[in-house]
Image 1 (cartoon, rainbow, N blue to C red):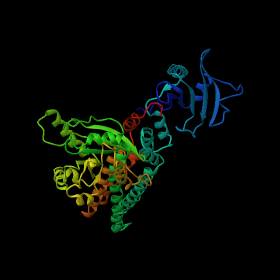
Image 2: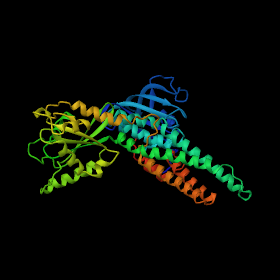
Image 3: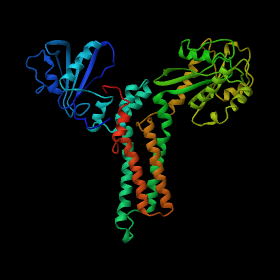
Image 4: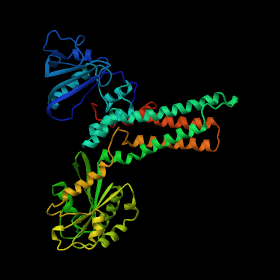
Length: 465
């Protein structure tokens, strides 16, 4: 997105495209009042854009030439106290697509330009209303589909993550200023801070950067939904369990083993957390080419999942059978970032306790009847327990891949600084690595940026935001 046309007055539909009860058309720029004065006929004969108060709403009509287009309400926001930091007007009209287009055409004919995706938020960033990470959180807030993703985006939009990044940058600035000062007095061999103090600061920076990087695993699943893979042998009731959890007939249920040939996905929200359930093909050796492809995809879904529900037939499988089957997953289930929950299905058909029942209890196995919907609430409670162990407090959770990459590069630069000190490299070389770390942190908040980066970020926004 080029910035050379940022002084234009822009307009766009800010509500969702299509027909509705009302629609809102937003304008921003230095000429909004001049343009709107040519089209707006106020009910109050004394109305004037020049004297209208900020945050006021006015009734009237939008006309194109002598033709009335619609009865509207005009909302006025004056710079710098507006979303973009510029003069802003929002026109609330009836939701006819024809009316929306007629008003936009009239605005363009009077000198407005149709806004590009994200251009209103871009102007807010350029005018100092947000830093770049907060601006990106606006898009996440719009896209949020659960309470947890909403809370995360809102915390970041309000500056929780930005505050942490600015604190880290300030520590680096203090650090590099001492290094630079020593370089200025290098001939006098003056040390303005002890190397012990430098190492302590490096320890703090490494710890905080590593914690933020580690938080991405949580932030990413909250933003996109927590992936839960339902796995097990054929015909243990995986599809029935998925249908029961979703409360709809999403997957085909059959007594024939191998019915599920591909991964089936759907999402539910439990207490504000979004869970993406994946019903997978039953794991077994198969000569059926299609079923084999489904099993291969099952392994992929297991690797992607944060939580794995291993479903077994409680009437048939002993604890040793389950333990042997799980051992086949090897390193995948050994990942400490994944949680394995054992689910014993078909409890309604049990005539005696499963073999190894004590071991099942020690593993906190949940026994259910997916068909009769018995004890399903216990699965939900176990899933919620997993995510509630990691509560978002101050918003310092990374959910953006661009931020993750910048943090990783900053940490790499800090590690290079430490290595340089340990190898007694000249201070001017250490200063280069510190400036690199500052650069990468600055990319997150937008203190250091390019037109290309801004274009990539704001080009993903919807038009009108």
